[in-house]
Each structure stands twice: as structure tokens, then as C-alpha cells.
Image (cartoon, rainbow, N blue to C red; front, side, top):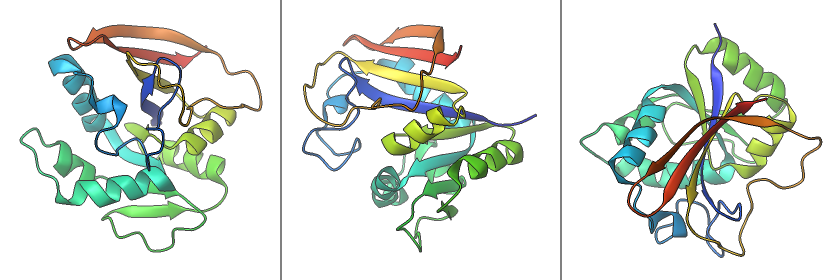
Length: 191
């Protein structure tokens, strides 16, 4: 059995996943935090983290997470899981990561992710990390694409899906409305 690469993203209707003018998707006050995802949405986020054996992150997302998560606590165990699980960060510039259980992948990303899929039986969770997601899609390494669509057109900011090297097709495997604000979770797998 091998692990699955699960990409999970907060995204606007127009495909933006980063707060315009912000430093990343985790910046406080970002549009994605203005919409209530409710208990169902919170459960989806907790379940996907608890189902994961490891996290795979790009450098920018990793740095945002590493700044925020080590000092967080919560009753559900989300913070404890974030901090204790193995983390792999794809970067050619990061040399000495300080967040516990972090390994840097600096070359041969596709090959290294294939090794991770062989090493872990559970999910390998990817959040944010737009450039990494593009690479994973190009390499055919995304097993699940879960988009939490927020009811907003941002108009500017970084789009998750930029130019791909080839057509990538996915099939919808699950959809669910969560919270009172019209947030939808769409789950896709490669077609």
C-alpha cells in the first residue's frame, strides 16, 4: 500500500488562494477567514489532518505555518498534530528548518515525493504551496484535490492554477456545503 498525496486548499470562486497584498494564505484577516465553514467544515479540516501521516509544503507556506503553529494550542488536538507530524518542505533556499520534525527536499521533487508515497500508508497533506501543487499536478502525483470554495470573487492575488505543462483532468468524487455562508468543499481525484 502506498500513501496518497492530498492537496487541500482554501480558494475563491475566481481561483485565488492567496490574500492579495498579503504574505500568504494564513495571514490574519485574509478573505478565507471571513466565511464561516461551520462544524462540518471544521470536521473536514480536522479529519484530513488526522488522516495524514505527513505534510508536504512549499517554502512560503511552510514559513507561515512554522511561525504560527508551534505556539498554538486547541482542545481538538489540531495544533498538537500539526506540530508533531513529519513535515517535508520543498525549497532550494531553506537550509536549517527550526520547526520540529522537518526535512528539506531541495531537488528531484517528483522522485522524492514518490519515495514519500512509498514510505507512508496514510495521506501526505499539501496545503497552500501553489508552485509545489503545480509541480505535483504536472508530475501526476496528486491523488486527491480538495477545494474549500469561499463565496467571494477576489479579483487579484495569486491563482492556484496557473499554466500547466499539459491538460490535467479530475473527476468530482464528493461535494458538500458547509457552514452558513455558502462555503463548499469539492473533492476531486484524477480522471
